[in-house]
Image 1 (cartoon, rainbow, N blue to C red):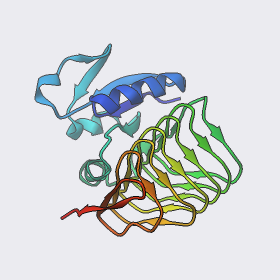
Image 2 (cartoon, rainbow, N blue to C red):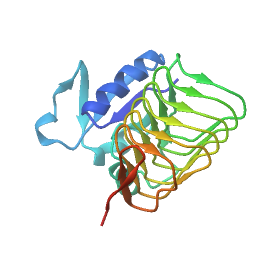
Image 3 (tube, one colour):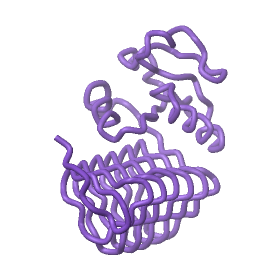
Image 4 (cartoon, rainbow, N blue to C red):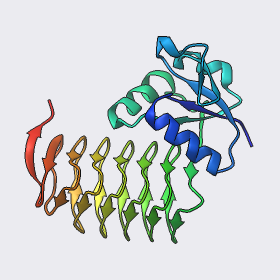
Length: 209
């Protein structure tokens, strides 16, 4: 198995390091653009350089460990917009995955999450610890689920959405592109593009420009 390079030596990079080790991966190190981190170590693993130096590690697998959906997509577009790069999938050994589940490249599924049946997860998604995806759930690319999210049957989460910790989305709803659902929110109706919704039941807080 190829060595793994984690892009992003921050808080989610640390979470990804732990996940990768639990998956039995050999970690070569990190790429990170922070000037102060160059030439140093991050929890025992070297900062190999800035993201622009990715081409010197073409024999490795990559994973983007950036919590922000928009920033994760921007990094892919700027530095990895080519099929030459190989993105791995990390699924914690404790995760339960049912039948007819599709998981895209560059996606990570963290400890004690449950993916039931007929679920589709796109590329470069983050499904954080203790999340639950019921039958027919469809996550498009660059979705971020914080810890403890519950998505009920046939929910669709479109691209670049971020769902806050312990939020719940009722069955058969759509959360449209770039929307944000706040922590602990209970979503009882569709969320429109770039809306930020909070509360129980979830209500519009603002629209992202």
